[in-house]
Image 1: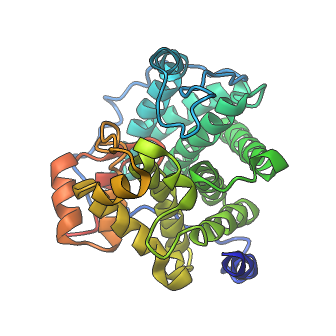
Image 2: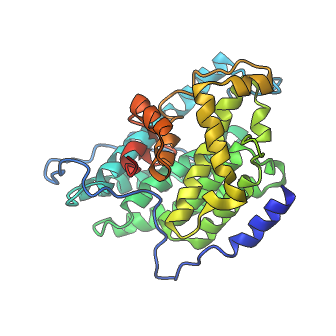
Length: 357
């Protein structure tokens, strides 16, 4: 693994440099036509669902004396959901706007793009998520940044965006990305588990949305390091420590890695092939685990909790993988769980990655 990490550090300098005037490409497909056109005259931008706050001091769902971090405290979980409910609603509604804009043809959804920018401007004006954060807030900040940058990337090319709002939002997203970098470059956060992968995805997506190669490069480097974490049997050692949620956390770790791989492919770098294709081993291990968790039960000694594993949000990665590597197994799962929607990935994955057959 040390050799793989050294190679990743060297390979990051081989990532295709974009010319200054060139645009880093989005990882999503833009469908030729996704549905009925949207009339500009009928759409009225609603008030922003939540105006955001600078501080993210949030309740952790796991007890500190739970070594596997697999037994959520019911009271803590309810409190966390209460604390983050408004943020989640904002992200979901924001991405519904930007998804509608991104797939419109002919592009008659410009008012939705302007509305989405205005909503993000409200948060930017409050310096949302740039204040005091605790250890839970650090995670929520990078998850939310992934949502916000995915949304902004979908509307970034709209020519009618308010110029002043656009400048403010771009500066705020960049500040958030550098806050995430500071969080994960800190010595106390050197543990390379699923959270580091999500941080990498959020910063990479911000780099793409803003055409900022430095941000893109930081995230892709962390993603390449992550490939070195995958064992020959397709498992991730740190996620195997999660007891009854080992399968869930393998799935949770795989999700941002696939988005990073798609970001790389869109910009001329194939992360799927790194380390002899070990990312495919991880994907296959998770796919088989969804069908039968016997491997994870045997290795961990715990019956696997599938309550969250089989939720549509956690299954959204399958639309991403199926678009690139379609199979009978992924096709069946998509038909069973669609629409596969994840705000952390960019919204409706069935819509944005509808390339597979």
